[in-house]
Length: 382
Image (cartoon, rainbow, N blue to C red; front, side):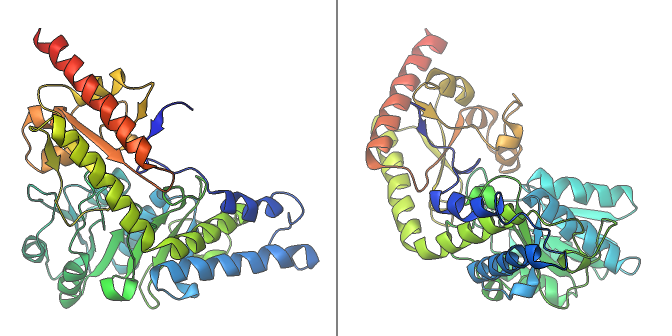
């Protein structure tokens, strides 16, 4: 495609190494890994190897990895599964105001089941204050779920500090790290969390596979009825090729970090500098330092971000926010939770770089966006 791809937070291309790893399991190694004959051997070994690779990516044990079809499924399993395991003694949950719908909606479902839900506000950078989380905790709090990195502005949350507070009150800690894998180091021990969500398509695996880390001993129940695959938490015949792909992507992410973070940060900052040079009133959304190295969310003054991107759609592929809300004309709920003005929220554009981004892509994209902004301001203000 001719346009420059700057929407890596929405999805990433499947890496060639990942395609090569999964192809044999779409062709000759087609056996069901639960069978009792030779056709099951290669798929069963491949799943075990992939489990080890995903565990290594986040500093976990292989038996703490549960494969799912997506981050959405993993988030639902974490929230609803913990709720099922801990009620009726504990029926209170805490989330932040900027969680992805895959966390927000299952939490709201708990409310419909009679639970109490506390939603912690965020500051102007999109960070949830540990003190605010502490104030929301109660004796019956079962679970705190705060994302590791925001998908729209890239802000990193103080997850380790929040996890320590949750544990002091006897609550479990879950973090949605779908946007973090492959961009920053992830270590479940350093974070001190009990559950962590991964999305394969965010770090060069195909869509349709994710994983949930469940710390050994964490009380959790399945939310599905079926056989005993994935330690009984996710019944159903394993999608072997997808799982192999996730393992290969995890292996690739481990090999590329931390150099990938350094490179993406340099590209991101180059883009920001180019835009600021010609648009001094450009406003950065999100934390200036504590954010994903690949993510630049900026508000263009005096124009609509959506209309700006329409003007450059043949040259730059980017978004105004989460791909889950790409067809929603309303301003971003994340930016609203950060208490940004309606005008600033309306002018926001999310630009996210990735492994395939080059310096000449950055320069060309910046030039296109600047030209489109100038044309838009003339069109909107005469």
